Image 1 (tube, rainbow, N blue to C red):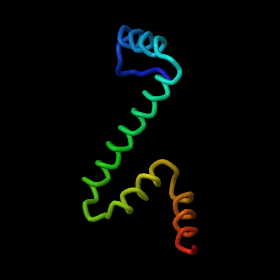
Image 2: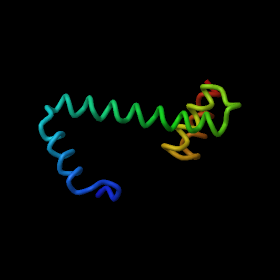
Image 3: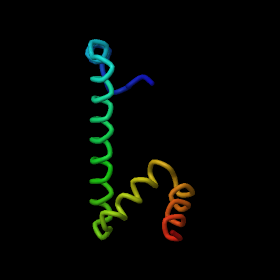
Length: 81
């Protein structure tokens, strides 16, 4: 995937930084970016739907990631246990 909002120079620099990292450092960086993306997304859900509880925000986040069918199945399974 080519980033269209990033200059070629910035992409080269980013690639050089990632290449200089060890495997565990790259994994830690990926985990940190994923956690930040989750936090930003959940904050967006909260701002659009302030009436939702924390659990409901989490379900809506899952819905964005996995779609209605998967989340509805998960919710049904957790309700029946």
